[in-house]
Length: 309
Image 1 (cartoon, one colour):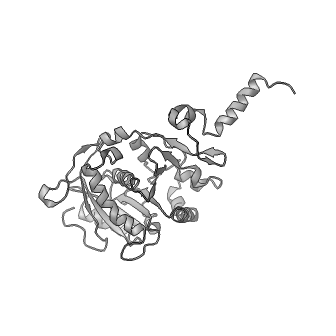
Image 2 (cartoon, one colour):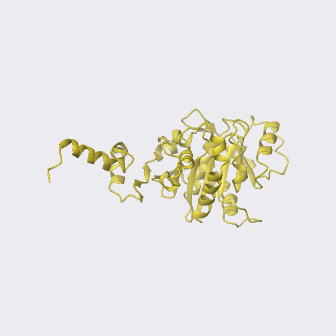
Image 3 (spheres, helix red, strand yellow):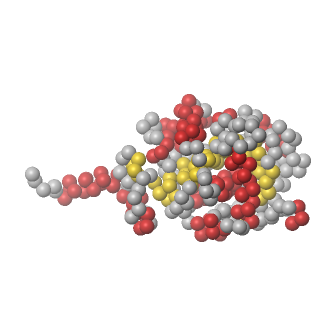
């Protein structure tokens, strides 16, 4: 046999590199990661992203290094009733209780920040893993907040029959946290989210791993056509309410959109509490022009909204 030409060798190398999502992803990977055994999924290797935890901590996020901080403790309180519901330890069993949708009435009220912090907090649990899904397909923000690229995501899984969700997931340097980005833009995103393929995908996500909590950062309820589609398929919904901005009228309208979900909690955001109230008060510069304060209220959607949101 003749020895391969230089041109043939280039083709062979290119084909080998394609298995790993392109040569650039390998070159960009930290050396400590490149030497680790990768999780093979068919002909693809599960994508890995090294999150800058110091940057996230400085931005006021929940991280392991920020343990015992005020925001750490606040989200520890927030996640407890959600985990009980997810595990069937609440007053009544909840179908798909481990599927948790985080939304708001209008843009800018902090739902993505809360989604990410909730996921980071649950990832620190000993007995649970977390999948954070950027379901705000019209205006995804999770990759930008984490400082990573979007790439394959939810829309790609719904559009491509031969793309299982396992091959679109992103591993991170937080062992128990995986990510699924929004994926490609698509003009029929609403129809895709309401499709049978989406229902089947949610069933798979809910049932495949009993210890996994799936958090969906979802579109604002009153700003997009996609937002009313998901609640009926979720086990729990969190509505982020911005103190001093979210009106009673918009909250009522927003709750009307999610009547199909029986378990709804309200999370009061961007607020200040006096020390004697028993709540913590925060003022974080988030690095993206946001500043947040947190207080948590888990109120049933059937109750009257807070008198002064």
